[in-house]
Amino acid sequence: MHFIEIFKQGGFIMWPLLAFSVAIWVITIHKILQLTKFQKEAKHYVNEATRIVETQKLHEMEYLYKNCPEVIAKAHYAVFDESSSREDYEQRLQRRLDETNSHLKKNMWMLGTIASSAPFVGLFGTVWGIMESFKQIGSSGKAGFSVVAGSISEALIATGSGIAVAVIAVMFYNYLNVKVAATAKEFKHSLGDMADQFNSIKR
Image 1 (cartoon, rainbow, N blue to C red):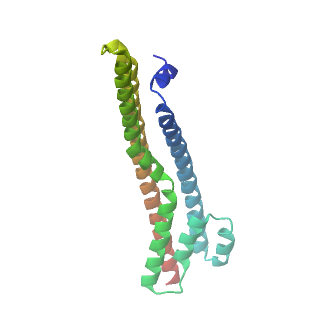
Image 2: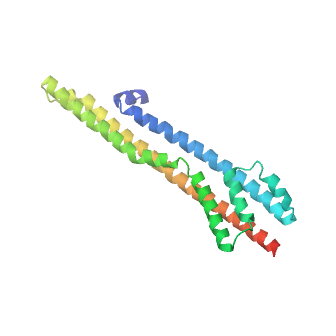
Image 3: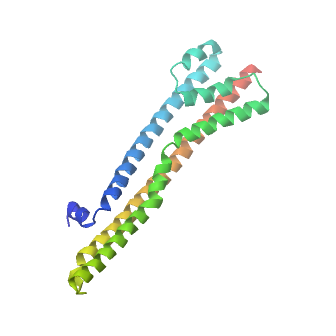
């Protein structure tokens, strides 16, 4: 059966499910592009900062971070800030890493919301289809399958579509969670290596 025919048979509840599907793809593609860009920029600025530390041309730091994304620059500034105690330094760096993690996870809650709500939207379509079946039975005075076939079909399509949308949302949500965690971990380790190098030069 053609997709458009199935969509029409699913009833009005297919429209919010379609909106959910579009949102899933938009959020996922945008997040993958964002993470890829972040990884590229983070690697670039870590490499440049490491080069500056190795050559001890620390006056170049200000120029380096002039066009740097704020979420990366703040974490780097925390590494090079020597105006506080070791405890304050570690707490400040952890806060900056938490901010970075929050930035990378931005909008992912939408996927989680879709994953949890799509089955219930489909279930609402199921209930609506069953109600229509009873209405048709009452108006026709007959209880044969031919009387309720259309409404039952609508109910089943709505149920299946809701589950399918939820499964796709969960898969992408889990995938992006793993990717965000790996990206944040890589960024943290690169900052740690840079901080060790900076501290060894100071000594």
